[in-house]
Length: 468
Image (cartoon, rainbow, N blue to C red; front, side):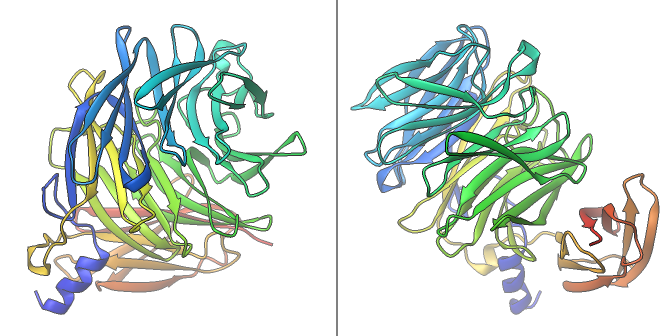
C-alpha cells in the first residue's frame, strides 16, 4: 500500500487492535465490576467508580495516577443498581452518585482527605436511577436522576445539596417514565440546570430547563425512537450540545449529535452500531460527549462488540476503534464514559466486559499510549457513512470515507423508508472518499435510512426530510 494512502487511512479510519499496550491506547485492568464512570481530578488523575449489582454487591472507587496502577477503595456494600456517576471538585474531592436499592434513595459518597462520607438524599419515591452528578465551584452538589414509573414515581428529578447533607429535590415536569435510559445534567452559565432525558412514552429526546424557579420542557429530537443515553455538554459560549442513541431496530441504531444555537437544534448522525442490547441488563449509557475549547466534539460510544472514539464536527468526523471484539467471544457491557485532560487535551475512557453470568464483569481504563509509527498501524477494511444536511428540506449528500472495495470495484447505495420499502437504489464506483448527491427532494417529510453495502459489509445512516 502506498505510504500516502497508509497515512490517510491512519488519520481517518478505525484502528483495529484489542488492548495492546504501547499502541494508541494503554489499557489498564481496574477491577471486577460493572457500569464504570470516570472523572479526571487535578493533574489528570483518573477517578474511576463502579459497582457490583447483587444483593451482596458493592460500590468501589479506583484512583489511577498518570502512568500508574489503580489504588482501589471500598465505598459501600449492599444492594445497588446502576449506573452510577462520578465527579470531582476544584479541590480534588470525589463525589459518587448511585441508587441504593436497600433504602430506595439516591446516595452521594464524598471522598475528602482520603475518607469517604455517605450522604443519603432523602425524598419520597424510589429515587436515584440513571443519575448524573456535577459539583460547581461553590462546592454545591447537583444531580439528575429518575424516580421511575414502575414504582409509581414522578419521573426526572433534580437535586441540589452540599456535603453537610442538606438537600432540595424537585420534579422537573417530565412524564412518569421508567429507568434504563439515563439522564444528563449541566449547569448553564446563568447558574440554572438543564437535564436531557429520554421520554419513553413519546420516545423523544427531551430537555428540561429551569429559569426563575420554574421548569420548562422542550423536544430536542423526535425522529423515531430517539434519545436514549443522552450526554449533555456546554461549549465556551454556553451553547448546549448533546450526543444520544437512536434505535432503528431491536439491535441496531445510530449515534446522533445535536448542537443548540439560540433556540434551534442542528442534528447530525455520527456513526452506526449493529450489536446493541437495550433494557435493564443491556445498554445503560452507551455514549459520552465532551466539547473542547475549539468547539470540537469528542464522543466515545459502543455496543456489545465495539468501543469507538470520534471527534470533529458534522460531516468531518475522525474515527478510532478503541476496542473491537467482533471476532471474540467477549461481550462488552455497553456503558462507556470519557473525560478530557485540560492540560494536554488527551482523551481518557472507561468501559467494561461482561462475564458469562452477566452479573459481573471486568472494568477497563484506556488512557493515551505511546504514538505508533505508520508502518505499525493495522489497517482495516472499514468505512463510515454520514448524511448531510440533516434534517434537510431537499436533496442530501452522502459522505463515505474509508476503504470501499468489492470484487467488481463497486458498492450499492439504497434509500429505504421507515417501513423498510426501497425508495432508491443505485450502484456506485468504489472510492476511498466519496460525496454522492442523493435526489430525495421528491420524498414526503419523514425519516429515511440510507444503506451502503459492499460485499458482506453494510453501514447505514438515518436522515430526515423536513419540508418547510
